[in-house]
Image 1: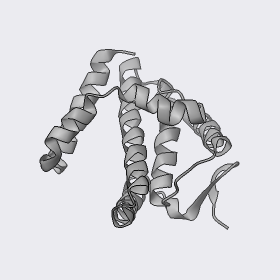
Image 2: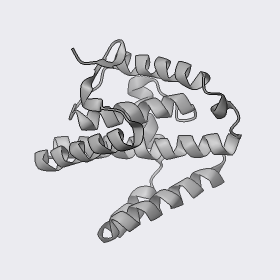
Image 3: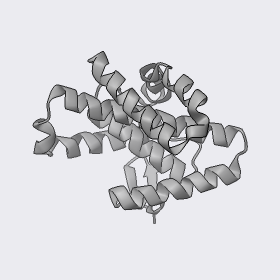
Image 4: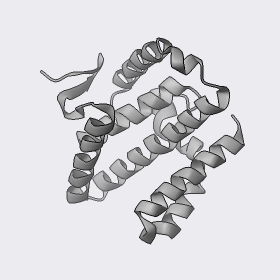
Length: 169
């Protein structure tokens, strides 16, 4: 892991967040000084067996975090998340353009997803534990629309089961 790449990703994310939320500048700067890899390990590594250095694992973490936010789910089963990871690993292995990326570019993608997945999980946890129902509902709608626009993925139509993400019955 190249610490320079991680720092570049952190600075880029900080600039994006400061642009969209300038009033939160002190909190954002403080939050981004934390060890996000350790946070990822606590949120996704220990409970779900995901590895911050594996692109498929961090993409899995981001995808299931997004799903949980959109569907306002407080918990996800370990087997379900691991099944999504297996699907993700197979899907990424079949993407030749990913194999052509250099080590730093793959790390840049992974680090961006580490920050994004961890941020989503922390936000969801905070809103759920602090009874922020209106904020959680607004965030769920925002992330639902973002997934539709950017990923062409309707997360409200999917269930997270021991078979992974599957269409709801």
